[in-house]
Length: 235
Image (cartoon, rainbow, N blue to C red):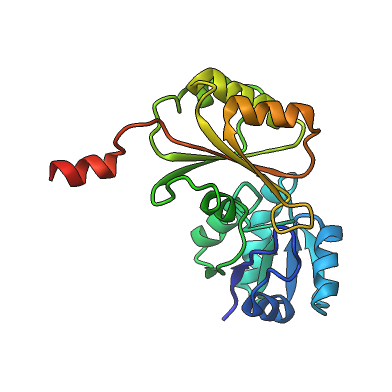
């Protein structure tokens, strides 16, 4: 059956890909890649010679309907991003929605995404959390962060190395510099690092040591009983 497959790819270490993902990529008629140069490295590593086409945030609005038509017409298409799961802070949502609206079969494979290992190794509660992705770069950034001041769940952010110190400072202004935070970078790669401490301490660390790589910021929730705990106690 023709299908749009959503295929997670490694966030760093090229061996972090499932056997099923390799099979799907090999058997697809075409792979839609966020950056074909990046994906080509992965394909060479696993001896995959399926043709590729570019699919990214700058062309997805123009191409989503055509791709849905291709799948409806019998082609099997695999969508990948540069790293992690398409649709999670990467292109993918629009194509998935367009295919579903057209009655096209969509199947998402399980696999790598950066925030899960960062969350689990943070040491903060991970039974309930909120994923905020990349904060807005400009408009709406301060209001988005301010809205989280009373959030009791663990919070997760993605940020670039150029803005991570700024983000840590902004979070300190909203929740207080003493709030615990865990910042992971270069996950699964040779220079993987996680720095834990208060917002003040971790901000000082990355002010003194130039931030490099992609960052996942995991912020502890506001102290106090979380909603689930309150419900269990009150019930």
